[in-house]
Length: 78
Image (tube, rainbow, N blue to C red; front, side):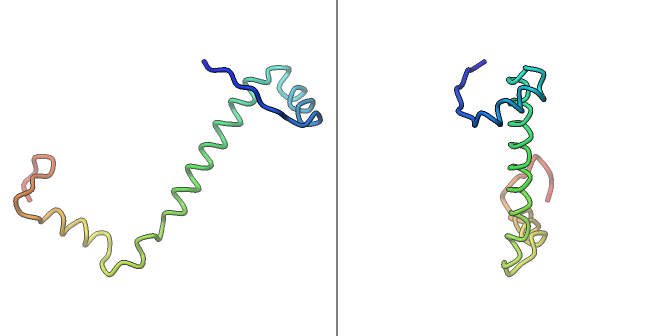
């Protein structure tokens, strides 16, 4: 496990310690996990629609790739 130092405002640190029952490490770890999960979700949601300006639908693009002769996708017959 790695250690890290962070600087927090006194009022935030005091409230966090009170809420966490003085287990600040667990509180910070939980908050960081939630933050990272939310950031990944936001990134995924922002990627939706990024293909909308393409001339073909994504299904058509995938089907065209799969029908590419001479390629073997996961040992399946095309």
